Length: 171
Image (cartoon, rainbow, N blue to C red):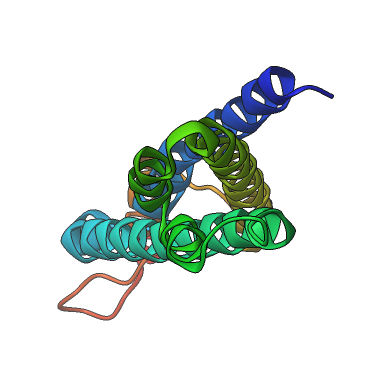
């Protein structure tokens, strides 16, 4: 599988997983009553914000770890300043490449390949985690009941009358 095909699959899986956010939010909001909709909305927003922040942190860690591992064996032929700069970031590799002269394009090419590989790996991991999360949410969230169903159940004919304790079915 070439880099372009892998990138397309990574973005497609990521898009599918991100598309699961709206239905999950809908599941949360339909599982709460009207009186608790504010709390349900706050919980859904908090989960999205926290999940997004943690997801970015994990993606960054996966990307950087993969980038550095990909470069590890390729930097022995360069001066130590260039190797350290390339290990730090793609921008560091670009700066070091300028200082290396004729060997610069080779270092920048290796760093670019490592960066693309790291990015693809991070997207694939994120997509797989998001798909697993969506599957867990679909499996673990309670059955879907609409608010109309909830309201109809709360105004059931056999519910007790507030002042008498008698049910409406007794009348």
